[in-house]
Amino acid sequence: MKILVCITHVPDTTSKINFTDNNTKFDPTGVQFIIGPYDDYALARAIEIKEANAGTTVTVLNVGTADTEPTIRKALAIGADDAIRINAEPTDSFFVASQIAEHAKSAGGYDLILMGRESIDYNSGVVHGIVGEILGLPSISPVMKLDIEGTTAKLAREIEGGKEYVEVSLPFVAGCQEPIAEWKIPNMRGIMSARTKPLKVVEPKAVDSGVKLQKFELPPPKGAVKMISADNVAELVTLLKNEAKVL
Amino acid sequence: MSILVFVEIAEGQIKKTSLEAVAYAHAMGGPVTAIALGAADQSALTSLGKYGAQKVLHAADEKLNKEVIQAYASVLTKALQDEGADILVLASSSLGTPVAARVATKIGASLATNVTELPDTTAGFVVKRSIYTGKAFAKVTLSNTKKVIALKKNAAEAKEVGSDVAVTPYSVTLSDADFATKILSSEKATGEVLLPEANIVVSGGRGMKGAEHWGILEELAKTLHAATGCSKPVSDMGWRPHHEHVGQTGVKVAPQLYIAVGISGAIQHLAGVNSSKYIVVINKDADAPFFKAADYGIVGDAFDVVPKLTEALKAAK
Ligand SMILES: Cc1cc2nc3c(=O)[nH]c(=O)nc-3n(C[C@H](O)[C@H](O)[C@H](O)COP(=O)(O)OP(=O)(O)OC[C@H]3O[C@@H](n4cnc5c(N)ncnc54)[C@H](O)[C@@H]3O)c2cc1C
Ligand SMILES: Nc1ncnc2c1ncn2[C@@H]1O[C@H](COP(=O)(O)O)[C@@H](O)[C@H]1O
Image (cartoon, rainbow over the protein chains, first blue to last red):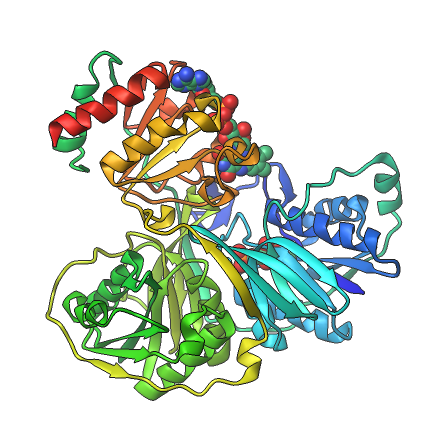
C-alpha cells in the first residue's frame, strides 16, 4: 500500500502571533515551528498502518519554502520513508491542494492520502476536500478512527454533537484528528536514519486560485477583568444581565 | 447577481448558523435563494423568507436524508447552475466546510471559510476570515466571478426582514459515484443545545475532579439553556465525550457567553474560546491564567460557587 501524508509547518500551539511588513507577513521571530498537530495524528496513523501491513510505504509531502525542511525531517524521523517538498509559499488552500493533487497524479496515485483535519495557521479545513475533488476521490474529515481491511476502510467521523460511521473503498482522502492514533516521538535511530532518507524538492505548477491576501489583523486587546466576590454571585448575574446583556 | 444559500437542518429545523447565512446573503444585497436537502419541516422552510430568502428550494429526495458530502456538493453545484447564481453562502461546519471545498473546486470559485464579516466591496470583494485558531484575522480578496463563502458563527445577525415564502420542490439526479462513501450509522446527542451553535456555553476542566461532578455544571447549563463543553484532559480521561472538548484541537466556540469552571486557561484552550463575546471564569486559584482572558471572574471553589450561581440565576428569572 502507498500512503501519502500531507504535513504543514506551523507555529507551536503556544505561540503569540505577530505580523510585520505593514501587517502583510507573518513574523517568525521567536516562534518555534512544529508539524501541524492534526497532521501529526495523520502521520502517526500512517506509521501504524505501515507497521501492520508489510510492503507499505509512507511518503510525506509539504508545500513550503526551504525553512520547512527541519519539520519534514522530523516526519521522516517519526517513520516516513521519503519526502517531497513542493518549493513554494503555501499562499492559499486551492494552490496547496492543486500541488498535492499534481504530485499524487505524477506519482501514479496513492491508496490513501492522509491529512490533518485543518492547518492551525489558515484553519481552512478544505485542502482534503479540494484534493479529493480534483482527483475524483471521496474525502472524509474529521476522522477519529480509521481501520483498513483489504480495499475497504471503516471510519468514524466527528459531526456536531456526535459521530458518524462510514465505509469507503480505497483510494480516498482523509482529514485526521485525535484519537485516531497517539502522537509519535522520534527516537534516536529514527533521527539518525532521517538524515539520509530521500527528500525531493519539486517546483510548483502555476495555479491561479482567485484568493489573494490583503492584510493580517490582530484582535483588539481585551479589557481588564472585573472580579466578583464568591459570596456575592448575585452581582455576577446582575452584571451579565445589565452590563453584558447576555442573559 | 443571485446568491444561493445552503441551509442545514438539525432535527427537522433550520440551524441557527444557517439562518445567519441567509441573513448574510440578504445583507450582501441578494436576491437570495435558500436550498435545503433531505427531510425538513415545511414550516421551518417557509420561515426562511422571514430571514431574507426570496425563494426556497427543497430537494426532498430521501437519499439526501443522510448527509453525504459528495452528493450534497453535486446537488448544490447543479442548483447554482439552475438558479444562475455565482455565489454560494453557507455556514462552516462538519458538513458545510467540506461541501464548500468540493463545490468551489467543481465550479472554479474563489473560496473562503471561517468568514467573520460582511464583504467589503469598496475595492474588489474582500472578506475577513479567522486564522491562527482565532488569534488573528486575514483580509483576502476573492477575485473570481464565482465565490463560495463559508461563515463562522456570528458573521451576520439572523433577524426578521421579510415574510414567509412558498417552498419550491427541487428534483435531483444523483449518481452512484455521489455515494462512494456509505454512512453506516451515526450517534448524535438529541434535544441538547449543540456546542458550535450555542449562545451560552458552560465548560468544565480538570478542576471538576471527576465525571461524577458534572451534574452541577449540567444544572447551570440547563438554567441558562446553554451547551456544555470541557477542556482537553477532561475528554482525554473520558469524563466527557470528545465532541465537547473546546480549544485548539477541539471545537472552536463563539458564544455570547462562555463560562469556564476549573479550567486553568492554557493557550491551547483559549484558542477555542477567544471568539466568545463575554467570558466568565470561576477558579479557586487567583493566579489562573484564564482570568487574564476573562471579562468577569470569581475566585472560589467550583463546588460552592456553581450551585450558588445556578440559584441566583433561577431567582433572577
Ligand atoms: C498541541 C496541544 C494541543 C492542545 N489542545 C488543547 C485543546 O484544544 N483544549 C484544551 O483544553 N487543552 C488543550 N491542550 C492542553 C492544554 O495545554 C492544558 O493542558 C489543558 O487545557 C488544561 O486543562 P484544565 O485547565 O482542565 O486542567 P488544569 O490545567 O489542570 O487546570 C485545572 C484548573 O482547575 C482549578 N481548580 C482545581 N480545583 C478547583 C475547584 N475545586 N474549584 C475551582 N477551580 C479549581 C485549578 O486552579 C486549575 O486552574 C493542548 C495541549 C497541546 C500540547
Ligand atoms: N502547505 C501545506 N503542505 C502540505 N499539506 C498541507 C499544507 N497546507 C495544508 N495541508 C494539509 O491540508 C490539511 C488541511 O489544511 P487547511 O485546509 O489549510 O485547514 C492540513 O492538515 C494538511 O494535512
